[in-house]
Length: 158
Image 1 (cartoon, rainbow, N blue to C red):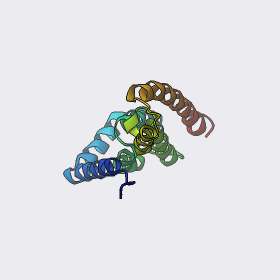
Image 2: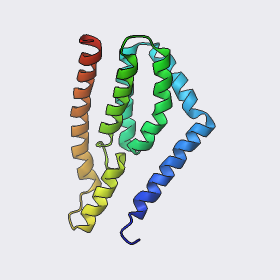
Image 3: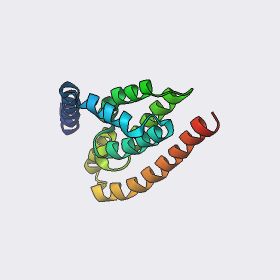
Image 4: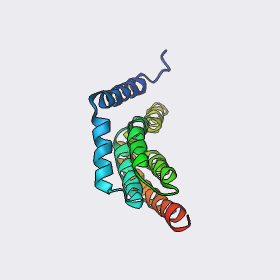
């Protein structure tokens, strides 16, 4: 029991409770409808919006509950759009943004929290500031590359 990362475990429990509350209160449905109206059915705009918003938001809250929260929103958006690849590109933009955003700051991914805790216990602490300075650069570069990839793969070469 002494080896269990209790802080991390309780952090994850709290995040999943928060996601459940968002479902229960109907906020998820409202967000899906707002996103659909904001993009006007433009698949490229929706793709880039999902990628950028997912990267930024999952950088500040854990990416696992964020993606779990966004899944019904992306499903709703995909059902309102037409085009040969719209389902694939929207899901890929969520997957890439949600995953890469976890590198932005330390709390963006539970793996980061566990790693920082282990680094401290091993005598090699990494400060929040140091992680964030490097994480911002890596996240910006990787998100830009993903935007180019999604555009080429699903809109230019499709």
